[in-house]
Length: 465
Image (cartoon, rainbow, N blue to C red; front, side, top):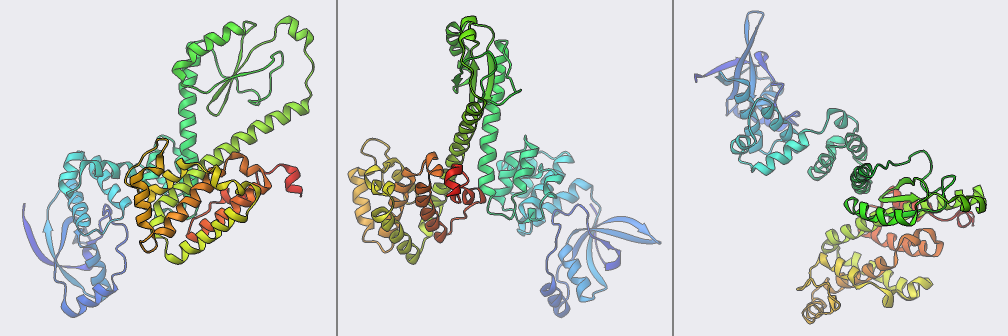
């Protein structure tokens, strides 16, 4: 391979359209240095085409230096001229930028994908860039995020590597990926991710259940509300287990309900089977009011919504506490423990049973932020002698006692917050005080949590008050 170093006019140098790094950044300081000391390192270029009788060259390595030379008013720069194919060219650009840590995760991912499209293997890419194969595969997952998802949010460029990984998780669900990407730059990212993960689990279960139902010659009725009883049917039985166990359950249920064909409906991860009435039952049936049917359906839907909200909110709160507990400063700890201690001692009737009614499993869960010697979930749990000794030791470590007290208080309150909390005005008062405390510690309360704290789950009568 012939290598030549020649001075080339900057007007004859073309930025490479396949450069993984899309933004060279601020080159002001580099331009000032080149003005004083000259360009110390030659660019690497490859012949491109002729234009008005002059040879044009495509930059492979040195895009920042070229931009700085133009800014500094330099007309000619030293260049190493190399003949190379497109694959070699892309490899050089990717390796150079990876070694200098110049690339964003998305730019690096697109660089790997470009080489993969040219026939490079994952092992070859890993060897060329000094990365592991699992690292390269992870970046390739990010590279598959569609262009329409990337352009769908002005804040997409602000996403962290972990958030890009979150998006790649929904590769099989483009609509969900776009929905999550729309949360870029907001405090609702974790909430939406948890919501979408739940939706994926439900859809996977329902698809497996549809297969099990088809094997029995049954289909799901989607023509009406889940919780309303179809005309000519009396009540429903529910199934929430694994699809492969449904056949046995259904056989036993069918023996008890032999009249006609059942109606099958889905409610999240539940199958409802409505047995048809016998002729005698139909004749004797009391007409049920339309209002009662609506109220029953509304109650079930509201209950399901509260349960899902409570599950997501609990996961976000406890994950955040475990992640950030060791970073709270002394002032934050004192303020939070004071507020929660007063809540426990002088709060609502619900709080009066806080200490005796706490779930120690929640305490074990949150103390994982600063692990105890034995992670034991037996009856003794937290109270193993070795764990008690460690807790006593922490009382004499600056800041540790307040942190352990705060974690225990948080765990006790977590044990009291349940789906019903969000439909009770007095219980919401407890949740509001708790969230106020967490917000002072830095917890990013999502819009959905704020709506719940403002009473979106309260009965209409309570809201009117």
